Image 1 (spheres, rainbow, N blue to C red):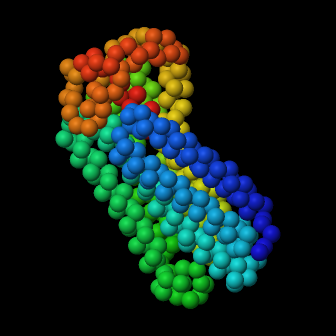
Image 2 (spheres, rainbow, N blue to C red):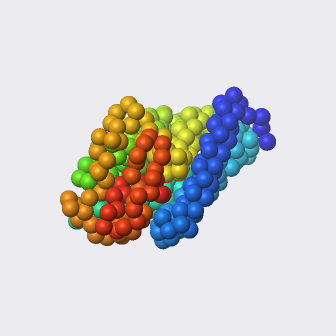
Image 3 (cartoon, one colour):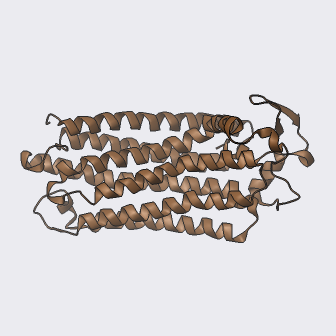
Length: 344
């Protein structure tokens, strides 16, 4: 074990804080969605699939965090490589290798969960064939990112142990590989977070609800901004001094992944109500269009998403803080699509 450097201590603190945030958010999401599923407000199939993906991603986030600790305390990440022994460098490279695999897999699991969510909320209710194709393309793109990244990490060095054993074999241009993976990740982020905005424009919702959902989507897109920033630091990593130059990219990797889990979880637990209140007070009042929910006369109601909308109890906003149940009649259900997002 080696005493961590100042940069190593900073990475340890950031790692601990953000891993705790991600785990807490995932736990709250699970408890909230389990309660909704028991009450019939969330389909059990959707709950099992999406929450399993998010839980799996959170487990990998903590695995990533554990190996990050190993890389600092046993591998000396944060110190320049010329100050470390060969054993310490091997520990650092082994830990970073596992981090890369866990990070990519976790991020792709979250992307799959978001694609399934958007398919249930947006694709089913637009009635547009191209929307379903866009969802399929997004799934194929994320699958390609996951498979391609794993293949790259397992074949970047020949033999494989050369990835963590200096001077054992030959390795490809690692900086180019990291850059390619980062750009591919950013492209899938743009597809996943921007396409729902287009779908949102065609759904029959009040302006207030559209703005509320749009802000939620924007909060999720902040992860893409972190991902974009991370690329600039990745290209500056020096493979010959990886322990001394990897700290800043590792910080952004930690923040990007954990905040993706936090945004995916919090938006459906407490975020919607807070955003809705903000929009009501400062942008568009709910009273501007009380009947702006999903209307069957202007949009096709077919598919699982719309059946859920017709089956759940109807609520209307009568003031800024209280919802009063006014009808359980299928013919008069006015549940908005933004209310669907609060269920996940």
